[in-house]
Image 1 (cartoon, helix red, strand yellow):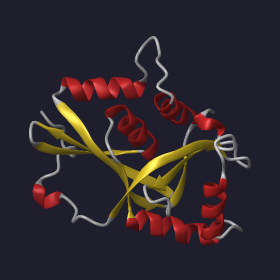
Image 2 (tube, rainbow, N blue to C red):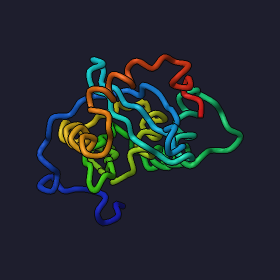
Image 3 (cartoon, helix red, strand yellow):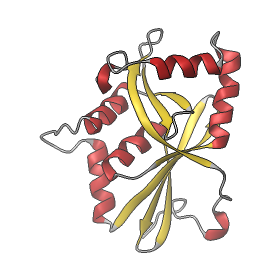
Image 4 (spheres, rainbow, N blue to C red):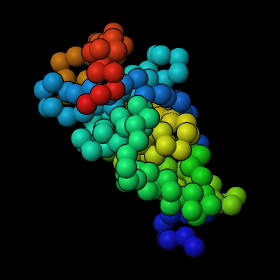
Amino acid sequence: MHLPGFKPEPEDLPAPEPEVEVRIRGLMMDPSTKMPIVVLNDLAGEIVLPIWVGLFEANAIALEIEKATTVRPMTHDLLRNVIDGLNARVTRVVVGDLREDTFHATIWMDQNGEVVALDARPSDAIALALRSDCPIFVSQQVYEHARKASNGNTTLSPEDLRRWLESLNDDEMGRYKM
């Protein structure tokens, strides 16, 4: 059984737009806001996209990156277990929209041949993608919006920000530790 709004009909699916597969370059703390940042990097190393996330979500991502085990399932482990229990599998996550300075993601699943899409925060989608061993994508539109938005909100140019993030070594990135 699918809840309304969670299973798109074929005519409701958005037309595919260009997407870039990304990996997590690292986790770091924003020195000015003290908020964690997930740094995404395309596979070619040309695109860098920082996404500010909450402390708990950053911890969930860090735990999975480090393959740390917990005594009891954490929330994202529980979600993965529920998905498995419903005979579904996460096939991909897409950071596909940026509205009012907030990133939006979609978790794409297959349940017995049916496509299921769930709206999610990027941090939750990324944490689930890591646990589900599925690819993470960013729409080209999101990358362009983020690049344009950063022009008005920071003294660093997007190119300067990209160079700075790419130049960080593992110690500066915190080796994924919070």
